[in-house]
Length: 219
Image (cartoon, rainbow, N blue to C red; front, side, top):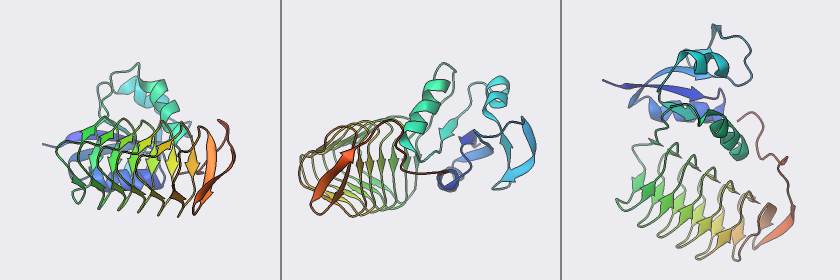
């Protein structure tokens, strides 16, 4: 029998999460953080939509997945919910290739055709997007995001909350600092500082960014 799962989010990330989860879970509904009413007839992917307050009051010990693209928003949501006894499964597409030595935390999504090679670590609530490659001995910290077709060569460290853009290549032994952004198609050949926006081939720091900086809107 499939276990029940609720998904936080009603955008693109929620669609991706549902497409992976539906093979192993019974998706009971979606939680819209902007919704004021407890529940109504409006649906998302043919499932009911609830607001978060109603969900917390009614449901206990449920499986929950935070399908929100903005890294800092995922952390904010989890910090709000962690005092409750919810469970956060990993969602892993059947086409992903993950070596048996890889360590996975909770609440991660591993999308189609991802490769994660030996001795790598994926902490909590990370997004490993379609066809990205995480080579041996890499560590991806919590609330980070690796975009489609990005490549992390061996022994890279992606610190908390960082965003790696699509088609980016990071050479071996690179550190990407906390809450930094690397733009699409960049080639990273030196370490990246905390809270910085970076882009180019080779990648260069464009500017410092603060906690108000957003990569996505409504994802």
